[in-house]
Image 1 (cartoon, rainbow, N blue to C red):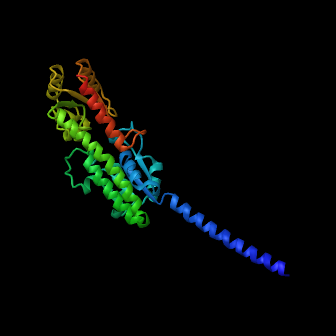
Image 2: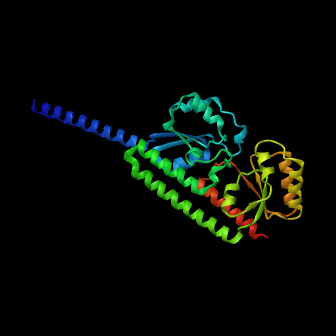
Image 3: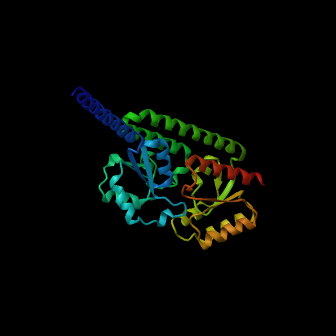
Length: 299
């Protein structure tokens, strides 16, 4: 009888120990699994959100491919279904991702879940919409995300702050590189098929000579014959040091002008509107700046 009681006591303690262990495992699983789902219109914002949120965030982008044209993008049916499970939504604004804004509105997503980048930066509607090429503005976005995640998951506030500090440090180095380029090449003239990279180039002190042409191409209208002639003349007379083209939007006119620049032996650099699938934000910016310097040093 004594042995049986001891066995029952042992069995009871064993069950309690198992329950406790299972509880610990459950807590650990919750701690290690994503707790905040972030849905962004663009991959670049999804990447920044993931870097700030770390393992406590699951971040995904609707426009995830690096070769898709954002202006011609159509929302797939499967993407609509994922909207319902999001805790934070990031969009660019300024008409760049209207398709995302429309779907958020149709799902009646509360405003406190949305982050409109151009809105909190208080930018005017006619501003260049390629906002991610502004390193200081992406710092501001990272701060906003850290604050948002900390409010949703206060127990991990220190983690988000550490991730933010690491991200800011990486961007500080990019800004140092920008300053070095500005000191060496400020005042340089360039042309482009579209104003994709202009925000970054403006920060370097560069000057574009064909903005009306670029705006027409971006808005999917044909540049005037006069604008085309002025650009061709600038290329042939070497009035520009660099030429940039949008790798995601290739038209007969953009191809013709790009070939003309190459034949004139003007350094030509392709820039995508979308974050490459094998890069994070800071690696992408460093790659573009390094490529720019390499091309200028060839002259």
